[in-house]
Image 1 (spheres, rainbow, N blue to C red):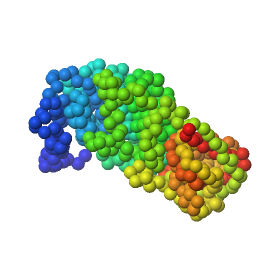
Image 2: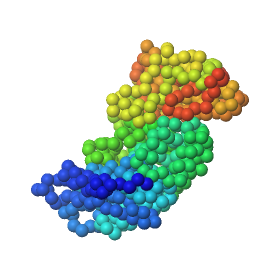
Image 3: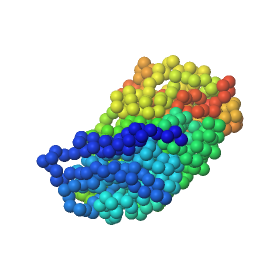
Image 4: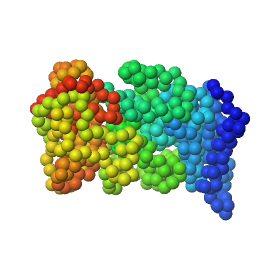
Amino acid sequence: MIPVTVKEDLVRRSLPLLLAALVALTVAPPAAQAAPGFAVAYQSIPGEGGTPLKAFVVTPTGRGSGPFPLIVLPSSWGVNNIEYVGAAAKLAYESGYSVISYTSRGFYDSAGEIDVAGPDTVADVSRVIDWGLAHAGGDPARIGVGGISYGAGQSLLAAARDPRIRAVAALSTWTDLARSLYPNETVSAQAVELLLAAGKLTGRPGPVLREAEAAYRENRFEDVLPISPPRSPATHVSSIKAAVMIGNAWNDGLFAPSQITDFFGALTGPKRLMLSPGDHATAELFGAAGLPNEIWASVGRWFDHHLKGAANGIERELPVQVKPNNGGGWRAFPSWAAATGRTSTVPLSADRIGAGWPTIAESGTVMVSGALQGFLNLPVGVSTPLIDRNAAAVWRGPVQWTSASVSGTPRVHLTVTPSGARTTLYAYLYEVNALGLGALVTHKAVTVAGTGTRAVDLDLEPVVWNVAAGNRLVLVVDTVDARYRGSSALGSSVTFGADSWLRVPWGS
């Protein structure tokens, strides 16, 4: 370890205090409104095994001595405890919460090593709750947890283990690590590289993360799979009794929505699902800083109702709230399955393509393409006449003479005969206009082993997408995509049988 100079050490120790002062100056109410208000303190909280965790503790003032409803917010992967201070100040000031925003174990100035939401990291949530009850005026009967990304997954896992937790707000969360990073036995390479880089840059990887990276670098990703079940909320869903709100984006490049909709369906307690345009953490980004944001407004209402008993109407709203990925207002359904009113089936003709060759059909870039979709309504595009038919199969659906919405989970049934020992297929569903210009609606990857003929049933990612009158849906399947680490051998081929089909879910 390289020793730091005295000057560097002073800067490191002073920075959290300066950040706390800045937050207090920027979001604190004017002096004339000193009651109610809030106070911000920087604390070192003993986590599991006494490991020091650095935290901003935001407590209400001018509301008596408590106890106050307590909210604990673990930080995201690669982000420190400043992440939620704006939202915490707003919650403390407007609703009288005591809020703890802390840096997750192994990152920045919190001690320990990154264990990828392992037992110690999940137990840290409960230890921070203990501290909040003893030192931050927390009410043991009114405890909520939440966060974004890594903090969201920790919160769900903690809720399965700690019965004191009554409400959860999980934003841009994962529910199944294997499905997120290794969908259908295909490595989501851009996502993995991003997580590994952020972990090494901002934290101290522990043995589990170091071994997982070694297996990934050596093309042994299947050896990483045993770490997934204990770290996946889906494994523990039956133990979660808290009221759970989930907010994710359609184009989340790290944690795609299919794992979310399945997990949500398995929850048995009070629940709310919000799916909206964007990429990982972009839909709720500004709300964490305390700025106006639809997702965080719902988080506040969710906690108010389930921790304070507020009759704010959220309990009467339909639990599934979705915004079409290409524009439009919120739509509400009693379940994710109810988002589909009818289906249509498009037969796919026989075809044969060469494998291992890239085409202009692509799923886009993690954290970039989805953000462009969410903020600017700029989809991943393609010119279908320019797609190389030697390397991709292209099937055109009928023209939609009236506007309609794809609403649900499209399914592709393919009869395939690969010539290579291992082949990766990428299915893209586009909305295409009369000129052949397409916008990516949804996609999915799948890797198949062996050379025999077999049926492949592939669920694309869930979506709600408005199709304009006069446009059609086009399905493209090829064998190379820059987002993923595929297995298609250059020079091999794939034959598609004539009994293949595409099933499209439509809104009512």
